[in-house]
Image 1: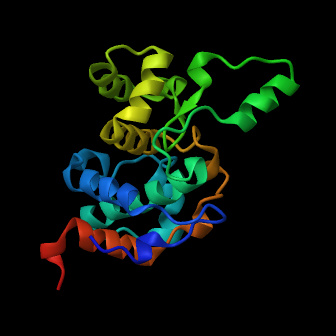
Image 2: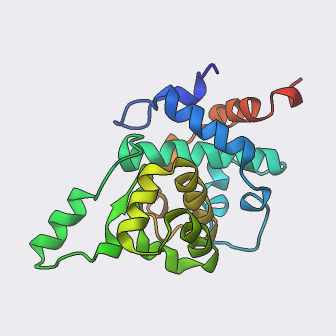
Length: 196
């Protein structure tokens, strides 16, 4: 696949590797439709980024927009590193305040999700359990680093539940880096036969 707009730099994190984009587009083609449909949640990712990437035209547009969010967010969270471990800044902050973070608070994977985020919805636990084998923090972290399709679906479903669990989104850090031309490119890559 050829990437142009989707290879744009994200803040001071550089540009995503094509191998990352290949996996993102591959998942986007097979991801269940229910991840992208309209709902009444005013605290989900689509409500948060409608000003940058909307208004929403159809399910294809919403699917491509989710890929753009995941592209930019992974740049902020891990510089597109599937195997990224704990957020060392959060560890240092906790240590300075005499606290030790619980295992369920430790981030993992390209989108730096933590096991305690499963508390946002039963569908999140239902997604993780068969893939990770248990809901333990260690197994969750391992699965988010190793099972890339699980990590993408989990992050997308979490973002549909809430943006409150994600600082770069809730604080609007990623928003200036989201690109409509990247959404259009993703749309063409996802649905090549639908292009004029």
